[in-house]
Length: 403
Image (tube, rainbow, N blue to C red; front, side):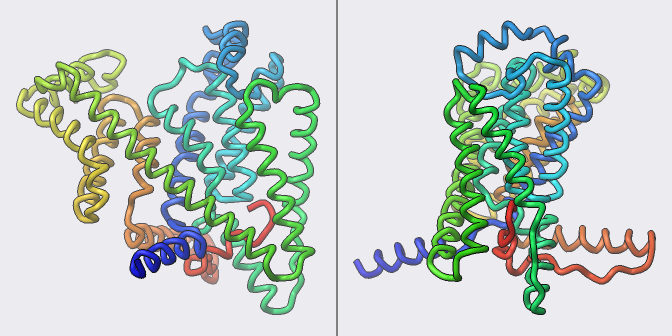
């Protein structure tokens, strides 16, 4: 009983004392925001056909469906062209700023609004990657995904250094963002635009109020229990969201694998052959013909795909096996991006897989990226002093308003 109590107390301490997985959450933040940003930029010339007034899924059809499923989309607040362009550009801007990690808490909310608004407006325009992005955009709101590799981390480190020198640090941008977005939220609520879906409006209001409480506690209250309690709650929410993201990724692979097992084409080892010869999935017909020329290769890839997807959730108990299968799945998605012409689906799945990447590998990757950046800066101008990010103290990232 004493051992059990000790294990429970250690588990509680681990969940409440730190926001776990700072590098993993940073990677999925960058991965999903970059995927959505690249998709929006590539489809910018076709935005009206995909999500706007020129699309086959008309305003009337979207209104009927949303009236039934009560999904959230800001695009249905108005059928004007200016409003559509504003929402689309806001989605692009929020994606770019979230990728850079600027005012991440606010940008994660706007990123979610952009994803849900466009996808729920035209529900038949996406693929499996859109479904993953749809879910992860909601989960990211609950995470502290800017602890490392973000502009927020750099700003927090500089603010901490200034405070250590006795300087007064004032944040005006955060309260200004909070005030502007609060006015928009209040106006949309009073105008009845939040009716229907209950989850997303409740989440928007919760985040807005929580930001105010966080700022007031840090500015007005004395250091002590109120701020400590808010830190504990934020860490528990972050760690819970991280667990949900990991469980979601495992569920995606497990269900995909078990459904494949039930298909006759997957059972006889020929399933991979058919998409390689569909015109829609053949951007490189010569490459598809080369890969499908060997029946043995097709059979191995078919059975290997099922085996990896079914086995992956069980390999989490063995780190080495998990890392091997993780590398195999990331490679498989890269091949799918090229061979089948599904780059954004593959990017979304790779971003989801990144939550399982080892911390040591991510730290080495970040170090190499930082050295490459420094070399580019030295070539482009005078050498810059190294900027200390909050790598060793990721909790410092969220000392400011709006992060």
